[in-house]
Length: 409
Image (cartoon, rainbow, N blue to C red; front, side, top):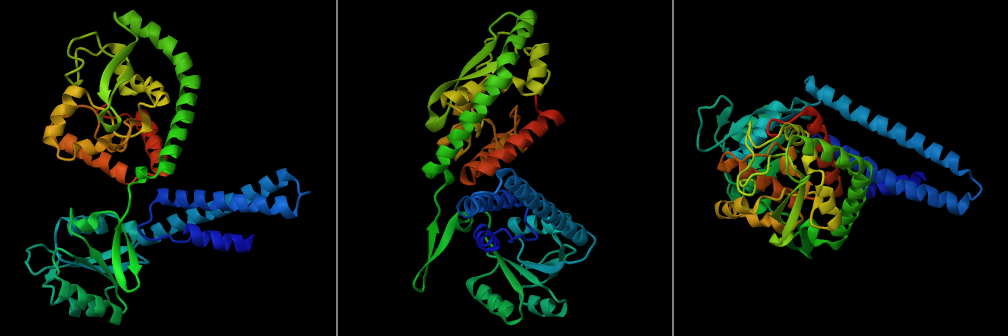
């Protein structure tokens, strides 16, 4: 079993924890490693120890899981505390200043728990900023005198010859060198490196939903989750809200609206009615203190309960639990004209919740930046989907409901 552990941990990258590793990545590593070792563990006892008590095996496995998980979390946060106190740090400088390196510098300054001690930046353009250290040419002497550990080079600021020289310099003096692609350039695309003998080839990776396996995993999860929600929540919530909504205003229990789904196809989206029946519901977004919203409707919208009938949409296959939120048709047409890559969000099924919503981009669109940021987050979700990202978004959605959101009206 120890041999199995070593082999599987190498495969899953269980011990590849870095300064920039996030908490959710830690959970993912634990889940993958213990899923694999669980199968190996019981396969071994099923073959060689058939008389072993299954209850004892579960107890032993639970003890192992708990002990390792506790130790891993403890060591992870202990290191963060140590780094936050100013110990176990890496000295870093940045070569070149652009939008991407500015974001990196901000990260170094704000996240002390990462353990980076930022000294400053070099740029041939000059600067009046306090952390400006000189030109690119002057950086090598400074790096040696100040025992710099890591060098972050902007590919927008350095030419090929400079990159080559700094790479040789870093190797010779045992310095880590990191290359930062310019924001929006080809380097930011998803690709893998392949070698055809001595020739380096960049292989553009397929999007997650190009893999039928991922589509199947997402669909199974959607069906199971929506069935549980319908049976254990909507079964008793629907008749209760039927009474409350009908007592306050005339009209149907459900509000139905045609929206755009996968590949732009139309479908009927269901919600609990939260407004007085009105002729503007298909063209005008709800606004703060909107007179159309009923008292019970205000509560439903604040808690997002009005969206819960969309579990039926998920079961029917029109929607997913997580994905880009579907927009009203009238607004969707105007957004297509304003945002160049708007239609890319139709590459997957729309969701009850999404990355944009849990990131603060929900509700009323007051300015062009609101919808632009929403589309940006939706496309990021499509390009970086994983089952664990869906779980993270669902957990964050539940947390936001209890915390309350400013734009939940």
